[in-house]
Length: 398
Image (cartoon, rainbow, N blue to C red; front, side):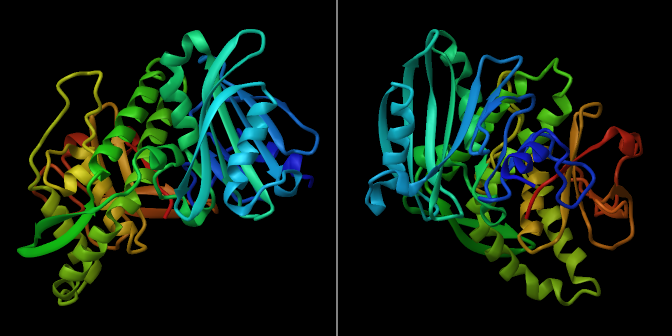
């Protein structure tokens, strides 16, 4: 199979990691390891015969997305300026006006630019350049719209590029543009009280601001799909993008909570469900909060939830997903447009109500339901919300 056919066979097909419910719009590169979980609906508009260049258009939103692989030795650069010079070369090919900045993205020297160019009309957009898993090659992403429509398309553009992951090992880290805009600064101590245990941990002092930016960014994208045939897939992506951003922001908190509660959980006959119940009982005590303006997301970002701010059912459910999945326990978030509610479910064997998901081999896997807004135990759900067909699972990568 050629490189070109590899990418073409993956994009716009059902992409399955473990389960049958899938990521609907994922671009995965088999040779260089990167993948993008882009907004729904993009279509391939053009590509090069060598499979190193692709252009995507969106039929409903005036946005163009381009990705290009460049070989390092095609440019005379020093090690520190590779991505800057590659991005400069790519933008110069468009005769674009641009400013380039360099930054570190989780150990990778990257470059970013806001640019303008003229073709049949004036266009504006964002672009990034980052190393790939093959040290001889760099990836350039460009996403743009007609300049007169850029203000209304910019969030969609940023969301597209920010969905980049360089490999499955670093898929759950803040995206490349958000990491540039909100670099970690200093540690912010936080104190938690869970299961009568006082827990000291920390996040970074701009984690709440950065995470809430992602929530509002992705909610603005989600709203574009309100009457779209792919609205369900858009909702799933909305939660995946928040999870991607949140996971590593609270990894230290996750570890500190487990360290504090593990000794008590290990006294139980089923330590896993006992630990999970401690978490569930904890989030059930959180203050309840919903957005007053319909234009704002109801979702309270995860670092804010950890810090004691108000939360709703989906933010509580995602928090438990992260806390359990950081231990390697498979966990799923369920949401229901009909019930206007969200639940968490985990693959821990214990009595109670379960929902089923089929894996890629057709095997049925049972997930124990957790209600985060009523003070009940795992496996309990109100009868008027127990219809499994009304619930949509969102599966997150580890």
